[in-house]
Image (cartoon, rainbow, N blue to C red; front, side, top):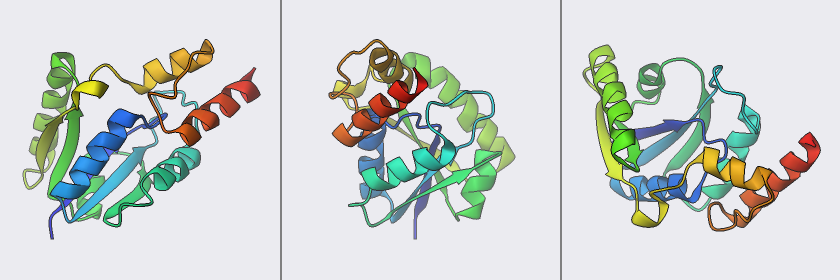
Length: 161
């Protein structure tokens, strides 16, 4: 059984992330979405909120599991029996960072490969940071995230103000 992990902060999950998840779910028997508890970033959503939002987004994908993790992605991958890291690439600027991570992960655990998926063109510009910034200034984010995610972002920003 081929298992892959797709890790990230997903704060918030975007249509670009969802595209990678759906495409990855077709490529692998099992795809584990690992939501990172990143101590460096100050998230809009708590770890539990992000996990629950993503679970709702992927509820129609039977072979996708969502869980949180701390620490190294290679340890998370081993824990879930994964043979592959799945990563999305939006632009050349992503590639440099992602290549460094893939090479580092390969040194840490040579049994796990990295597969890069080129982001679908309509999402090549999209990031969680852009979504949060547009939302913070009252912009329409409905084309960037599912409607229920847009509502959760709006609700969260209203509570912060």
